[in-house]
Length: 157
Image (cartoon, rainbow, N blue to C red; front, side, top):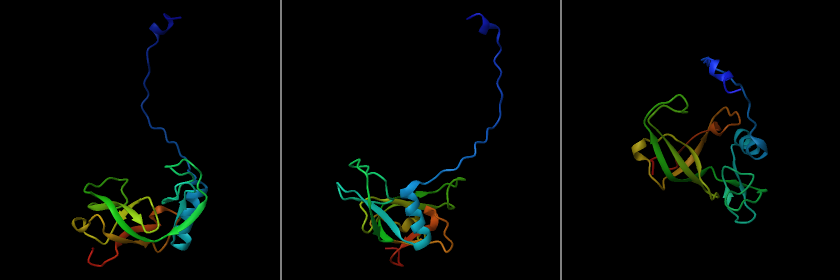
């Protein structure tokens, strides 16, 4: 059997395989995205054990590993916990550089939501800065129904 493979010349075919697929958000994320689209409201889920409000919502608590059941509406305003400035354009980025991503702790939530910052110069962004969600005029059931978060104070503070 081993000698058989000695006479076989490997063949390499170069090409591209296109694999179309669809992805379903699931029960928890679907509710969250529908509410962004239809009501411009941000919802989280409260863990019954540690009582943390998770935003974005999770079906189970990543801290306690128990199922979450209670929906909690949180504010569209919050505080920048940390941020990064993107200085290089890539095809997958939702904005032209320079722009910022931030971890935003929304009022009423115990976890941070990663999103874009807008209407602020990158050098003016600070940890602790108060921000408010800006919703798209036409919403489609996506996290980008929130176009970005802008400073709550027009001066950027």
